Amino acid sequence: MEYLDEVDENNNLTHRKLPKDDFHKFGKWYREVICLVINNKGEVLLQQRSANKKDKPLEWEVCTGHVSSGELPEEAVMRELKEEVDLNVTKNDLIPLKTLKIKEKINSRYHYAFSYIFLVKTNKEIKDFKLQEEEVSNIKYIKIEELQDMILNKEKNFTLAVYEEMPEIIEKVLKISETK
Image 1: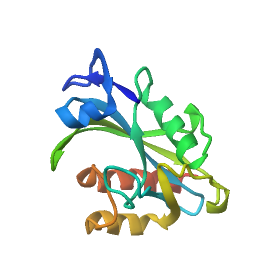
Image 2: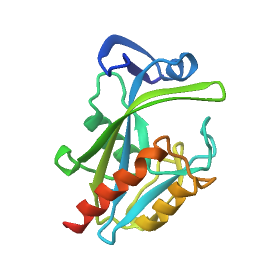
Image 3: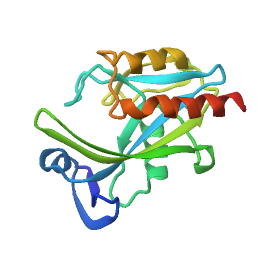
């Protein structure tokens, strides 16, 4: 069972750790990571969630995950990338983009999170990734303009908790990717 550290509404640790599902069940605050992986062609890596996922099975997303108890967000994003798609990155590879506060309730599940958003550049090709099948069923690279369209149109098979902030984040990614 995965445990997460609880934080308060100001992102301060409360020094309580709880099972991951309790955060979604009872509306407790936690930390999560979102990572835009971009290749040397300026394409963004998308992952298709496993059919076995409780939330949003088979929907496409960028790399995301929870910050486990005792972890820093940088450690969590490095772990998630390694586990889910076998991408090894170091702290020096991480480009912090923004931290967002998200407070939403979807059906009976709460999503009260501080989302640490990062950018990672890679030259890894699709054939070289190894997927964690429990989490990811497929991956693909798409042009960043396609991602912009998916976000603007709130594409049905694409999931992202930070839609409203994404145009600003994508602008940052475009500027960074121009300075290879």
